[in-house]
Length: 302
Image (cartoon, rainbow, N blue to C red; front, side):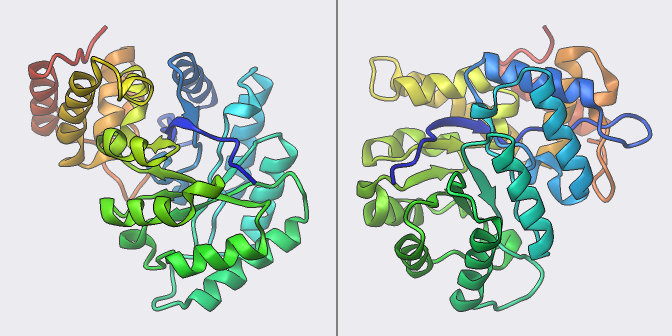
């Protein structure tokens, strides 16, 4: 089956109030702004602080987005968990909510897990959910999960569940790995999303589906412009501008840095709140971030 999902997705930042509870209204406002700027919503990804959110919090935030009129078609919720029962609960809820795909991180606590073990995890998830509407996008982030998703594992999952395992987010940062996945599986509709917009112009000619990138949270229109126009007359300039912004963020703690910029854009200091063990951006670092962004013509305040 060909993946129904393409384009630019944000692992949507999760705002917290001063009691460190998810702030629903800010979350909805941010999601609506992203959709209005042609970005999809990979809610509960790494940069959403998903590992710091409970199952109930994720379900409630999803429900509230939909109640607010955010289209289910824009969603790619992160539903992976170390607990298979949590993963099933989150995945089943996402499917029943109308999400066309879910992004599934493998279990990330045990070291040295085998392809056999990872296949069993994904197979058990698919069988327990038991819904033909389920579309799974694998999440390869070995530097965090210590559970790499190999080409052999992708091939086995595709053979066993060709109508369900539809794509992958490659957060390895290794272009050669992304290209190898596209070359091996892209021709039959398997969607490959690199995790950085800096790879868009390189990946799109080979058949990539787009990107799922942290900095879509702060630069959705600019990154979508690269996706839509990489092969046009302005493609090189669009890519260079997106790269300049990305490079400033990626040398910092990404979540506090993006939340700081969001606080400046909105004039809302609570946007800087993060859940422990993360901490806010230090004032001197924040000041330099603003200077660096202004130097590449990225407006930090409206």
